[in-house]
Amino acid sequence: MAINILMPALSPTMEEGTLAKWLVKEGDQVKSGQVIAEIETDKATMEFEAVDEGRIGKILIPAGTAGVKVNVAIAVLVEDGEDLGASPAAAKPAVAVAAAAPVVSTSTPAPAAPKVAGARVFASPLARRIAAEKGLDLTKLSGTGPHGRIIRADVEGHASIPVPKAAPAAPTSSPAPVVAAPAQGMSTDTVLKMYQGRAFTEVPLDGIRRIIAARLTEAKQTIPHFYLRRSVRLDGLIAFREQLNKGLEARGVKLSINDFIIKACAMALQSVPDANAVWAGDRVLRLNPSDVAVAVAIEGGLFTPVLKDADQKSLSALSVEMKDLAARAKTRKLAPHEYQGGSFAISNLGMMGIENFDAVINPPQAAILAVGAGIKQPVVLADGTLGVATVMSMTLSVDHRVIDGALGATLLAAICANLENPLSMLA
Image 1 (cartoon, rainbow, N blue to C red):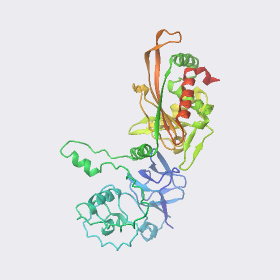
Image 2: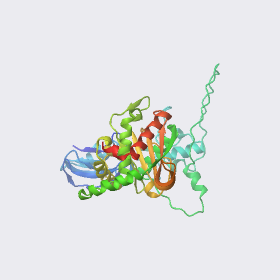
Image 3: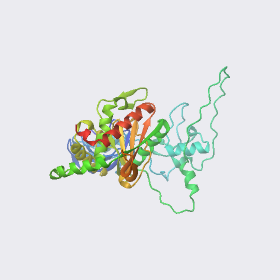
Image 4: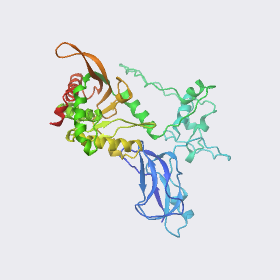
């Protein structure tokens, strides 16, 4: 009996993915547990193992296909000697994949079945956008895409069809307040027309770029950010780090300033527990452990691997773990549980010479610390004389729904105190 191999959900939040690579071909014999494909989720490439034994009778989704929905049939597994053509599972797989380009058909498409009022209209996002700009009613159009899906070619060049207007609502004694629609960016067609005649190269969005765009747009539109800024003197920390690194040299461990910042933030979350929280829609979740996410730049985007229980780990353990997570992030080999979660994040651009900046909160986290470069500056010393110190600027971006101003200031003060008194982080 033929069995459909379905697109797996490789993380709790995965809704679709990219079938990056097939490691088997049609006719190959596979065993249970054998890796048969590589699947790209929003931020990672993961191996997909076969559950059952059999022969690959038909590959339904080719390698490189993006937007494959979870639980959609991607291949058919058959038994030896089984006729694939007679298998209903292979003859009509339930595939729902976003078309990468308009499908040009040389035959005349069959007329669309009449649409029932209120029934769902299957159309690509681009087709919907173009239809909205043209004022077309999608229920009156025929789709030539897979399974009758309305695609770009079906709406481009089509005469406008007025969309029926809703009947005016009966007047009420207290009219509802007018709510402004959320701002929409320029459409693809509008931008392309703007740059007609100018040389450019179109760069398609991969999975990670799409998810970054979606998450950061969500963050700036829905999270009420406010920002707290402080500077911290690093001279004591720099001297302490040099001393520790001499002692750790034989073990092959070299602590970075970022390792101390991670530890300082983790300990601060323990001393200010009300700030160790996340936004959960209709409630706030206060966490017991200090799970600190750290932004890692990779080609085409970034990851935020999470160091769990960071307050309980030594500086050397944090350093080793961070180096491992960063190395695997750059090759996109992190598992979803290694970059999801956390209540707090750190984004450090100091090594790139950035003096200060404001970071965007990564939901559902409630705060992110933007760390700038340590710069030698003139300062007033404790005895009132003028001296030189290495000063680092930090900006804490805070979700006002979770953390109020005074609480955020207390958290940032605790972080600064830990950095200016590094010995306390070993106690």
